[in-house]
Length: 105
Length: 216
Image: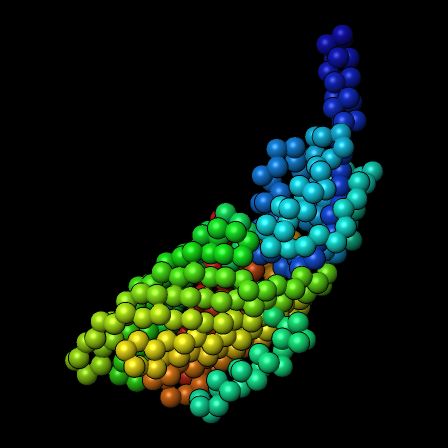
């Protein structure tokens, strides 16, 4: 029982350290463009999950870092993939929730 | 008509640049893009490595034939993205290709091996539903003129999510000096699924054409 409690507390604390960022991207007009962005973002160590929405031109990133991935790092990676960043913001929902929200539509 | 095509492209480029009209043959920094083309008159395989988001180095092997000519070439190329305008709903690009290599030119049992330098410009514009591209390649080994002009325009049948395959209808117009008397008109079906890009078309002369591009 103690072990289970410890595991639960560990899970909760890890989850509370995670952050989710929503990045609006300029020029991401097709899946071919988006896969380049996805592969580039997957090279960041702290990235846990990524959701790409090309209809609404944004990417959502779950990271294991409390403050999220530094904006400058995201921006540089997206520019190196050939695109531009319009806006980066921290959001309260996880990739899983955002994905579920848009896939329902 | 064929003599007018370069002029048409020039005017097209001049008209479209100010409108920010200009998407393409390379992906993210550190990626490899490999392309295969296959048709009765033209086949190629090429593979390029993106050194940066703007620069790619690659190798290409190709064969072309028509009007009694048979060409076979091996080249090294440098591709530079001269400009890109990323808008929230569109992407416009201007590309410069610089190729150098050896070409074997055969006609009437005679064969010439020639060194060549070949620059090409490509401009393209893409949204979620529209695609337009124009290109002009200078190819003049040892006084021969095999310049190629190409234009593609089309639309996507419908929008798809990132995980789905998106189908497009593309109309391609193509002409290579000396190799074809007529302008080649090729209605094409394009399918894009993430890193895989596939085109299949049949020219109005009945010649099938396939194009495959894969990035990794």
